Image (tube, rainbow, N blue to C red; front, side, top):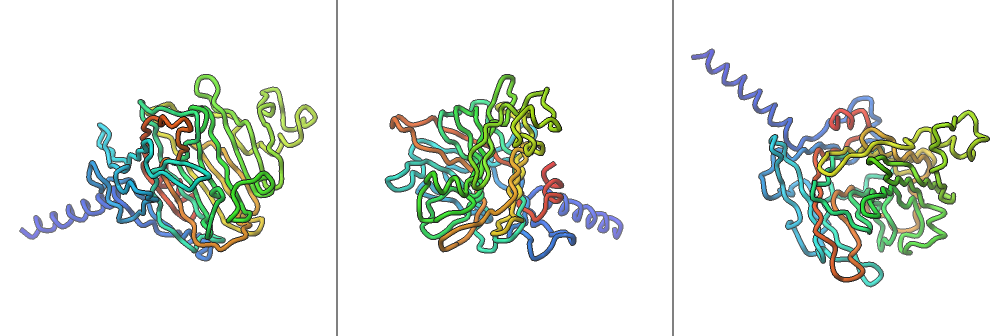
Length: 341
């Protein structure tokens, strides 16, 4: 009898441990991470502890403009994997004022005013369903946003698709006057960009790069297979500086999961950075000042979901649903790699 009880205790412990592996989990900060620069968020969520058909928002907040929980549902693949489906429809969460009209369905990991001078690594898996319809307009799927009072500028990093899904833009504002909307002068001074365009056979090519205080550089001619970075006379000198970026990579198709990993450090000094990996391909690699704002800083947040412009013709774009899984925010890339394999 005692043996049976011991077995039950062991089995119970195993079940408890196993269940914790498949639920929201607070991630421990490794000893090698500088505690002064640790991320204000440290968690992993694969949504396995959620009930199908709805979502428990105990860990997240909604960027809500009126639709509430309706755009968010937990679904399940035939293999048993649960994931979060986020949907946007014409007119949902319409925003903001007279100078722009948008539709959105976004969740955020929680606002934090402790994100300055911190090293933050986050990532997630994303899937466009097989029946997904791209549009000839902006479709943002994630953003890291530094919010100021009266903010009218772009996030530090926005991951956006354009041109019927044939262009991928990774860009944002590293500073400026927070209460002044987009203008060319400030974009030149503070804007950063890494852009890819899709070619034949789902091959993606680096097409543009921009850094603070520089004009946008066209990079298609840097991809030549004949070009060798040691022979700079054959190509513009700036091509040498692109050697860390993937000049091209094979993309995923509708219905296939892809993985985004993002590293960010908000800094007024040159030790700041924004790095983005897509399926282990380095697609953005900016180093330098990332927080150069004039305005009253409020907080930073990490958002997942769809944020798009409204159809200018008024007819309405088609409904769009995107799948998200394994949302992770930690303090170093090594830990992020552990959770997002």
